[in-house]
Figure 1 (spheres, rainbow, N blue to C red):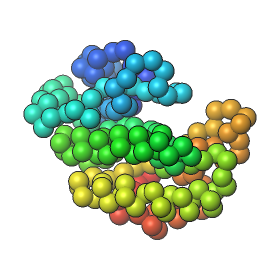
Figure 2: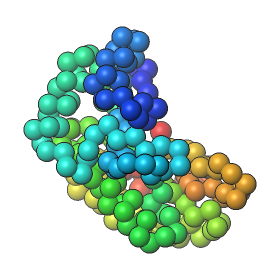
Figure 3: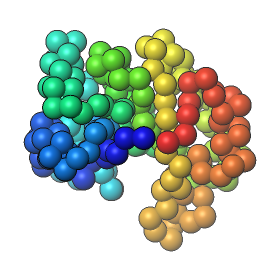
Length: 192
């Protein structure tokens, strides 16, 4: 086991400074936050963009990985935790589009894992959300497979206020739902 962390808590600190601090603090692994590049509050509890995945070239990816490995650190995965099952179609489309950028960046960087959420609509029950996941996720899973990446899902209900209770905004939280997910896509999707 190696000790590491997600770089999201350092939104104003350049990635190489985070990496230097990680090494000086005896961490061994980084999960790099890859939200879209933007200004202002773009997400309720995150939004750190340590890599501009939408514009990352292969040479930039190689240089970045070389710098991090040169510090004696490993990249465990690229992280982007949005809601691919968001009820607003335009929001959902933007989320999935960016998630695909993260997947292609992971391929360019030879990072095997992309870490994310399954998502969910807080106004739907688990079964209704699962039916929606069966429509939305096959395309994401195929995209990851086509790029030789695996997806790991965080087991967090995303409940931050009373209006999000009891369903939350992520269905990958119960043994029943995890069995469904792993039976459907277990070759590509894993739990974090």
